[in-house]
Length: 379
Image (cartoon, rainbow, N blue to C red):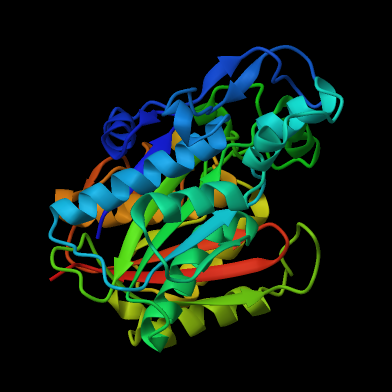
C-alpha cells in the first residue's frame, strides 16, 4: 500500500519520481571514485547525507528508517490500519559500509559499545519495530541484486500462510565506498569513467555495464489493502548453482524462474504488458532477459530499465523498480529512459503512457539468484 524511498535523487518518494521524470541520471562525478586503478573522480549515484540523527550514526540506518517511516505514513494516509501481527523483512547486501570502513581504517577497531551496536544490521530493524510497536516476524535477508523481489515474495508467503497480517518490506544498499566500487569496476560489471547514459545502455548497442547507485526503498504489503498502488500476484525464485557471478549460458534456471513466476501468479505470458528488466546493461543479463522476453511474453511487451538513471542500487534495486512500477499504475506513465543507441525493438523510448496490463519484474542477483515478480493494476 504505502511507498517510501531514499535515493540519489533525494530523501522521499517524490524526489525519486520527480528526479526520474527529468530524464537526467542521479549520478554525479565524485572525487575518489576513479577507474579500476583507483584514479581520479568517477560517476556514482550516492544517497546524500541527511535524515534524522537519532535514527543512526550512518546513512544506512537513517535511510532505512526514513524510507520505512514514509511508507507507513503513506499507507495510513491511504486507509491502512495495521493488524495485530506486523512483520518486517529487510533486504541487505552490505550494512553500514561507511561506518565499518571508518571502524577499521580510522578507529583501529575501537568504538564505544553503543556505537558498535549501531553498525550491526539487526539494530535498525530492532529500532524500527520498537518505534511502531510491531511484534510480528522480523528478519534480514540477502539475495544480492534480487533482494527486493525475494523480500516481497517472502512477505507474500507470510501473508498467505497466516504468519503475519501485514509486512513492512524494506531493502537498503548504501555501500558505495571507493573500495567496493573499484572492485565492481575490476569485475567488468560497472563503469565510473563515463557519464551514465554513455556507458549504461541496457538492451542497446555499446553498453558497458552499470553506474553504481544507492537507495533504500520500502513498501507495505497487506492482506487488507484498501487503496493499493498495485496487486502482488505472485512470483518465483530459482538459483543458478553455477558460478559466483555468471549466468549459466543454457539459461535453464532463468527459464524455470520465469515459468514458475507466471504459474505462481496464475497468469499466462500473453497477459504481461510491461517487462521491468533487471537491466544493468551487462552483456550476459541483456542477452538472458531478451531471450526470456521472446520466449514467454507477447511481441508488443514493452521493455524498460531505470538503471541508466537511478544507478544500480544493488540489494535495493529490485524494490526501487517495484515501487516505480507500482506508482506508474496510479500516475499513468512509465518513466523509462530515452535510448541513446541502436536498441531492442521492444525497448520503451522515454516516458510512456501506461496501458492496462501486468508488469513482470525481473531481478537476477549476483551469486546465482533468479527472481521474477508479477504485478497487476489495483482494480
